[in-house]
Image 1 (tube, rainbow, N blue to C red):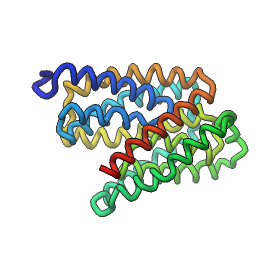
Image 2: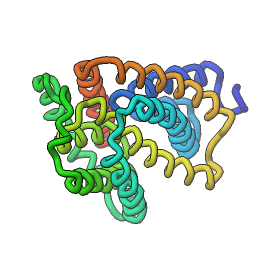
Image 3: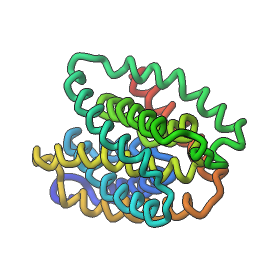
Image 4: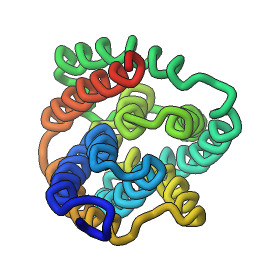
Length: 258
């Protein structure tokens, strides 16, 4: 038993899952769909599983965001207002989380996801060109703030796929190419994840013996994934987005039905 909490085979299983989650998350978002169930399957207390998952994801997101920033694939005009409003959205969600039924939102997303996947499969030029220069700066700021508020609220209330939806929103609403949308979404998603991590830290719910080991796996997955996203053409990112939409569909469908 590792730390008297989980067996070593289960720890290895989580490490592999977290590496894969970091790889996927750094490219198309949605890594939590892989990592969180893996933590839960170890038998950890659910709160501890959430805390470890958010902590390791934040470590990985920091590295991925740094690589995107270094390669100048972040649109700061969009990133800054989306980060600020994401904090507000997550806070509002925390106030309402006990009064609203998250499955309502999950059912809405379940209805939307198949259309998104079909769109990505057949719209082969989606996100291939950055045409955001055609959009006035004020509009970029306002739309980005609305994206941050909406998805920050979603992240605080439901969670899975926030990064994926951010990429899709930045690409479709602000005409970013997929690389710029991915980089901007990673900065936004890092801020959202950091806020959650801090709350778990202050509550003393993070099991550091497990979190630090899995954080190393998350760092490795994010490093490789972000490198591929930066180097590859948009078609690669589009394929990953389609795969993640499929994973989200399965995850949210299971949560609603069972």
